[in-house]
Length: 382
Ligand SMILES: NC(=O)c1ccc[n+]([C@@H]2O[C@H](COP(=O)([O-])OP(=O)(O)OC[C@H]3O[C@@H](n4cnc5c(N)ncnc54)[C@H](O)[C@@H]3O)[C@@H](O)[C@H]2O)c1
Image (cartoon, rainbow, N blue to C red; front, side, top):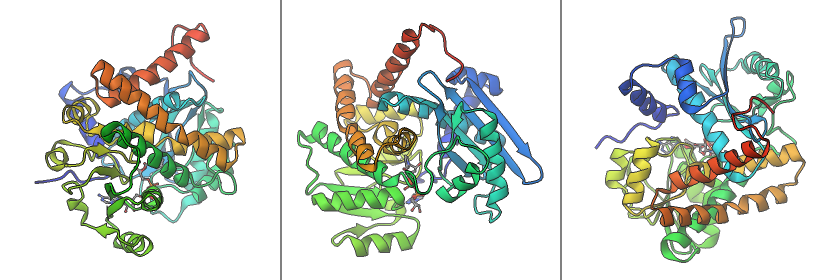
């Protein structure tokens, strides 16, 4: 069985394939399909900077979303990634209850480049030119240190050193409480003691999540493509077992926690997946949102929609913008538990997949906000 190689953009390839089925479309068609307000392209030959900033929706506030730095196979993949991710941020902000819109930026290139200052200062100037409609932060391929370069050029950047910093601990906490909500839904008991959890990816979020799970007495099987991360986890968390990256899907586990990259719920993995709960931090876990969301639901798997369960990072950044302390951010992330239970209830009542139920709540909040300000049509700025 060939399991889809997981790289940022794997879900993008799937989306591009879909677009191909419907016929090739230009940027305006792609924007219209997902209802994007703005997509800005930037190029600076001196530094080699090539960036795309997608502002999906600013009804609830300025569009917030991280900067992804990735060597995309094509320009189309980079655009589709920015469009998908920015729309996801709109939905995430809406359902999380924060007053922010959705945006995302991508920098096209090799994210291992040592020449970071020129690239990220160029990106900062691009962000600044949008005048606050878009606020950036770190994402795949970028770090809080890179954001310090961005800050030299703009105030519209969050997740900075000495402020809220690395959002991963709060994200991990949100995933942990979200997983408990899934357990409550699936087994009628929120406890994760003695539950077997398969964790894919032992990075900033995955490792912190493992610590919460170990504390509660869950049985852990972990994997990562970086052997050093696996040995660190095994040493820190006695009783934890490890498997190869390809073997994580077929484990006889209660919960599968994807904490690496997207598109891991796909035709191939669903064939072997035994877990009754899928709850993890990764973005865009469903290779095809509609088709795989329905398939997961049909199989009776309790799936925590990714943008709901991983909203701790967004909450952390929002807290930074609002001047909250870490504890307040963590308390807010705790509300992910109730949000998920609400989603599962709607999913059951209306017989729709959980990801569709989550979308409904997010759209409801957006519609209410539009109606409240008497817009009736999409607004164009914060
Ligand atoms: N950091 C946050 O606050 C945050 C917030 C929301 C969403 N997310 C999402 O959660 C996921 C994890 O974030 P992170 O900050 O921990 O990232 P990270 O880069 O620190 O960790 C990802 C880990 O996954 C491993 N990995 C990559 N491909 C793998 C594979 N095929 N099999 C097994 N392991 C693999 C990497 O080696 C790495 O250790 C990402 O999808 C990210 O977009 C993170």
